[in-house]
Every structure is written in structure tokens, then in C-alpha cells.
Image 1 (cartoon, rainbow, N blue to C red):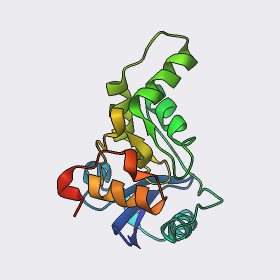
Image 2 (cartoon, rainbow, N blue to C red):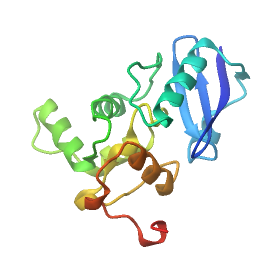
Image 3 (cartoon, helix red, strand yellow):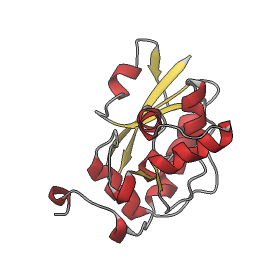
Length: 176
């Protein structure tokens, strides 16, 4: 069975999905993939997994790093799973570039290079945002590129984690 529920956060409403195994999705409402992800097989219910996820989010949005993870049921292609596993190793309050992730995958596979664009595609299909911290991935030279919830939310999440924003390029229209 598949379940969904909503959670309020200081930066917008969040849609949560889970099955009996774990959390399957966490999106800001109206996010790029969120609407296409939910089919007709979901029931609105606040399951134990979704309650645990809400507890994790409450701690996170209080400005603290949660010391636990809710159970997750992550599915995807082997390449995407590799990228998402690397995302889970990015420390709270730190950032990494798409290129650095590509270099790590190349190193793991024993190949000379990996496409940063391919990494970007996998990052963009992360269904469990915030907990699998795709917001901590930045472009080359500190460019704040891409985030399904919107660059403005990415900036708010990085600010909440006290990331040093001096070295990041923030689009001028978002500085106000």
C-alpha cells in the first residue's frame, strides 16, 4: 500500500509519500516531479514512517542536524542510486559540485571520467529531497543551479544549515 500526507514547513508545504518499507518521496508542493509521481494508488494516512519523517523535518527546520533518519525505500536505476548514495554522504552545512560527484563515481568505477550533466540529471530525479540532500549540490564556480523546489528554497535550506554563502553565486533577483 502507498500512503501520502502533508507537512507544514517554514518555507512551504511539503508532500510526503511512503509505503510499508519506508519513505518514498518528499517534495515541496508543486515541485517539478511531485504531481507526476503520485498515481491513483495512494491513500492519505499519517503512518508511523510519515510521523517519523515529520519529526525529522521539525528538528531540521529548528536549525539542528537530526541524529536519525526515517526508514527510506529508495528506488531507481543503478546510476541514480549511486548518485543518491553519494548525496547522503554530504555533511550538513557543506556543499559539493556536480563535477566532484562525477569524479567520485568515475573513481569508484575505475574510469577516467563521468559526465557532470548525467550526475545533474540523477540529482534532479531525487524523490526524497532535504533528507537526501540534493540542495547541497552546486554548479561549478559556486553557481546555485537547479533545485526542484526552486532556487529560492535551495538558498533558504543552505542558509538554515549555515553554509558559507560568500563563495556561492546567487542570482541577483533572489538577493532581495
